[in-house]
Each structure stands twice: as C-alpha cells, then as structure tokens.
Image (cartoon, rainbow, N blue to C red; front, side, top):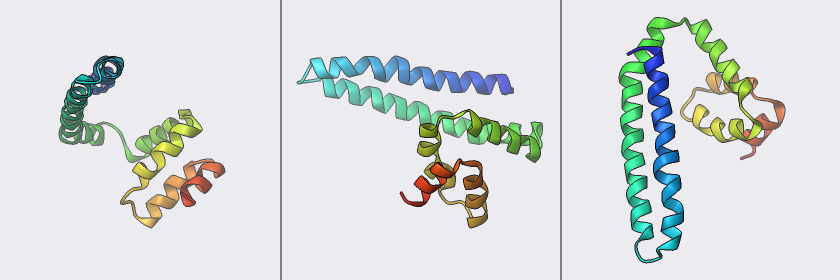
Length: 124
C-alpha cells in the first residue's frame, strides 16, 4: 500500500456517501411506504464500507505512516490540516480528536484551536 493508495481509499469512501446515500434521500421521501427501507439499506451499506475502510487504515495506513514520516512531520501535518479547516469543521472534530486522550494530549490539541473553539469545547 502506498500513500497514493490511501488517498484513493479515502476518496472512494467519500464517494460512497455522495453516490449511495445522498441520491437515496429524495426517493425515501417520495415513497412513504418503502422509501425508508431503501434509505436504511444504503446506510447499512455505508456502515459496512466505513468499517472496512477504518480496519484497512488501522491495518495498513497507520504502519505505513509510522514508517514514512517522523513524529515532527506528523505534528506539522496535523497543524496544517487544522489550519485548513473551517471553525465549524474544527468544532465538529474536537470531541472525536480528544476522546480518550490524556490531559496532556487534550491540552496540546486544544492549544492548536483558536480561542473561540477552545471555549466552545470546554463549555459543551
């Protein structure tokens, strides 16, 4: 697996939502008797794809990243990624990034957020 292959995998997961779930929503509204079943089937498909994608990341992507870049490069990439996100995206991501983290890790990650987002996280 290459880094390019990881990007392809991420795009295919994003495309699944765009191509599977989004198109099923109008049909679920238009067919009150069975539309919800078709939408539920699509959501189940997405869940299966996401489970597979995440297992693949844990099995192949994380070891590849550890072999390919240094901790300092990873930290820089994380900071750059956070910088590129909107406030809304940062606010949405914060609880997931911090879940189960040590107090020290929470402090480091919160320090990367702008003050309004730190305040939002602390008073959620």
